[in-house]
Image 1 (spheres, helix red, strand yellow):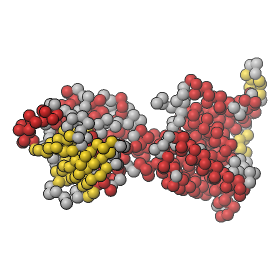
Image 2 (tube, chains in turn yellow, cyan; image 1 turned 90 degrees about the vertical axis):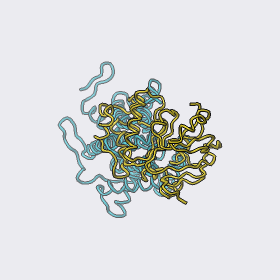
Image 3 (cartoon, chains in turn yellow, green; image 1 turned 90 degrees about the horizontal axis):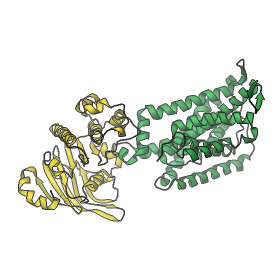
Image 4 (cartoon, chains in turn orange, yellow; image 1 turned 120 degrees about the vertical axis):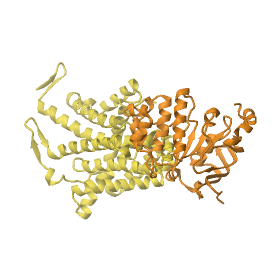
Length: 236
Length: 298
């Protein structure tokens, strides 16, 4: 049964990489317009959760519902068509395409996406280098491009995997500003992030993942009360 | 007279004749190796059936003419489409199961498919060829002043250059081409963007096969339409693809024409080596630049 107000529901989700059982019945829901952060130690199953939602990890059991529709029956290319965008941990910028080609690669799936020029105004670095090969960009610019190309598609849910990993503080700050802007535009964001100090500036709610399960779920207002426990669980 | 000191002197007309022959052979090498490169780039399948699909294109043209009276111009469109449909059946029923395996399995499967197709045609039509005349509008010679050019052969060179250029533009300058290039790098991520990559793979195989079928139609009036016409060509085409760089579109086209011309020149100056010159070049390229002339090192 759909949970009231839930846009995306994950229920008792199990997933395997070959013989390795990675998700052990994780359950949580994402509400429309919120920023939900999946936090947990390395190897807890956060990235696998995103990959299982999208269907990149096909060996999975449990329920994934988006607006009440069962996503487990939807082919991999059908997920984006429902307005779910994905920014992978490795960024996935294509070496054989220019920056401009990378930007317009994902098809527009819904109305309301940003125009190319609007995106270039938001990311002036990309505008300057639109004719460059995608992988010639710096790590931070590649991350911006990976986010930018989803903004064009009109997706209203974005699954972001470790957007600040390996980036300089000034770039992390810039990415934070962009995500705040997306929040303000009403985008629903699921953020997997090791950098807890980055996530806490953005998240409305948190799901703590450990050994492939959601062991806690709480709102931003409860964060202070939870900090001592989190420090022990996450080492922050 | 054209002379290479201490080697040979030849009348210029003989040189032009061999250069034209080289250019025509190069046109077929380029068209076929282009199809192989497109297929390998996207599917990572070494399509040994390419020669059989080329032969099929020639046979479909011949059938269309014999059975339905459809002329060359109709065959130029219908035969590649028919070969594309055959390719869709091959991909959907068998080939798609090879994608997760080592490319060797795809090579073995397509080798088997080649044996079945060619064996079937040999059974029904024997090894001898069927005549297929060029269309009236392209028959006869054209005097260029410095040489006599058979019009049909000039047409083959022209249309193959246009087909290669069109394919290159499609892949390098269009949205569909960008999908193809991206899916070659990371098919899973491209699918998360909402692009139906399995369908794209089917269509890519069909397109590569249709190029082979198109080459088959072009070849029908020049060579005999024979079940073995693909076998005779495919090994040379593989050498061209390897020398150009596996999966490189530009490499396949440029190397196809260059090696065709080189083969023609070798026929003039040292005919004994003309059958092996392409393989010698391939071996040298592999020694000096294992990824091929235009290939990217892994």
